[in-house]
Image 1 (cartoon, rainbow, N blue to C red):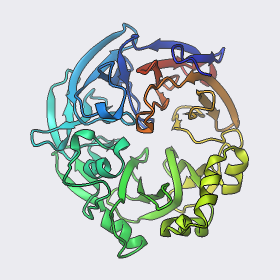
Image 2: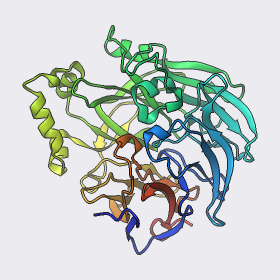
Image 3: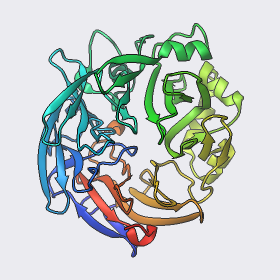
Image 4: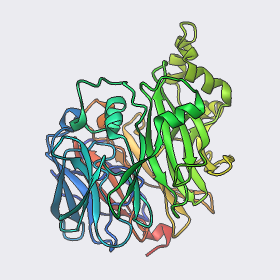
Amino acid sequence: MADRNGPIGALNPSARLAAHTPAGENIFFGFHDISPWSPDGSRLLCLRLDPEWQSMADTAQTAEVCLWDSDEGQITPVGQTECWNFQQAARQQWLPDGSGRIAYNRLDNAGSCTGIIANPDGEVTRHIKGGIYAISPCATWALAPDFETLTRNWPAYGYASLTDPEKPRGQGNIDAGITRIDLRNGEVSTLISLADVIERWKPGLPTDGHFLTHPSISPSGQRIVFLHRFFAEDEGSFTRLISCDPQGRNMAVLAEEKVSHFDWLDDDTLLVWARYTGGGLAAMRASGRLNSPWLRPVVNLARKFSGRWKKRVLAESYFAVDVDTGRREKFGWPSLDVDGHPMVARSHDWLVTDTYPDKGGWMSLILWNRSRNLREDIARIGDGVSSTDSDAKCDLHPRWNRTENQIAVDHCVAGIRRLSIFDVSHIVGAS
């Protein structure tokens, strides 16, 4: 079993544990789709929590937005946030224009989510109504889901500070969706509404429990993908992966039924963990027929099994998907045979991903070379989360630095979150 007090269980001899945040400091970054490093690579954005905050009940508290100098070990607060969760933090990120400005979410005086644009010293220069999620490569526009809807329907990715007892979980909002923000003047407009998406899929379908989430912008800014998700009657999530242009036009469904984590392989191709079983299973799950009394025991039994045979039967794996045509092919199979959180490097052929904890409590940090079809396991890291609530889990969520020779991961030691950096320059050949 993984040692909860000594989480690095194995290390590739060609890799090096370069730095980690101080022991006893409850610090993490969040998701795997953005780099925590500053444009010059000197500091990492992160959130700092009280060491006692280890469960979902604590996410309504005020966290600190900080900069971590991994060379000096210094942690400098630059802001505060009441809008954060354990999976994606406060979406704190550097604007991709090299200015050193940062963005993150917090509450405004009215108790609503607002996006903050600030200088590196923390001076706030703009407020964005509704919050911020993904920023375009040119740093002139951004996207955001409706965080209030996420809070009601998927608390792990919403903000507990937005909980409204007058709006119970599952209540729909047809106007909620993906908003587009003009970062030059702060104007916010609806890019795609939930009503738009459902009308194209199943006209007249009630929107209760449905939501749009995880908007992502292609490397050139010319294409967008997002998830349409709801929880089916069999209690599992049903997800549709949808692409469109930056104006919300030319929508195309790339996958549906099971879709989880993804990143852009290039401007036209998405790497995504998904299940393609044809229309039959998807239609049955969407309609609720799998929840019938005679099928439910079979579904429950199937969920208890795991392994490569199950993924092979269910056509579940990583896929490379063309965002314009929807054409797809398996990626990395069978070496990459479990769901993870990929981040693709742009300057070399390696991508980084991870695994969920195995039966022994170990998570793997993995490099994959796209041109050589080569897997290199970098480290095994123990799952040190103290909470039994899956919404408070701590995935590694690996992320490249700016020169793509180091990887930052989140992990827990005896319940306290920590950021660690692995140097993999001898493996990837970048310096």
